[in-house]
Length: 135
Image 1 (cartoon, one colour):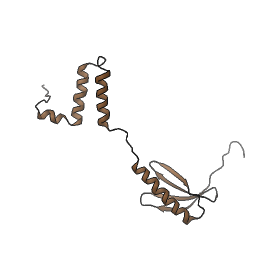
Image 2 (cartoon, one colour; image 1 turned 90 degrees about the vertical axis):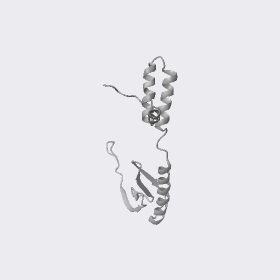
Image 3 (spheres, helix red, strand yellow; image 1 turned 120 degrees about the vertical axis):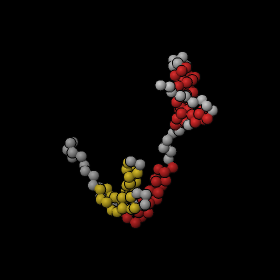
Image 4 (cartoon, rainbow, N blue to C red; image 1 turned 90 degrees about the horizontal axis):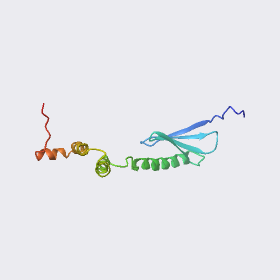
């Protein structure tokens, strides 16, 4: 084989398994005996070697694999922290470590803006502590 050429992979599609949540394609690669299952999930392709040589057994194995893969994708935590927690930790960090570098008025301004975003400003309005603009 010359150094500049690369062997082309041949994929033979044997069948398709429609699970209702997505399609699983059964393929044989490079004329080998094993059947592979391939699906598109969470923005990428997942490939699984069923280690089966006949199509019927490979369908069953691919179905089990896809159910397990789909279950993992649905129960996986996508977000680490809630925005509320991050914002409150940031305000605490400003209060404890940045006092002196940032003016007290700026820290108070951040707290007031967070109270508006958080929805606690409606509680302040009920107590008569609203801010009014004069022109």
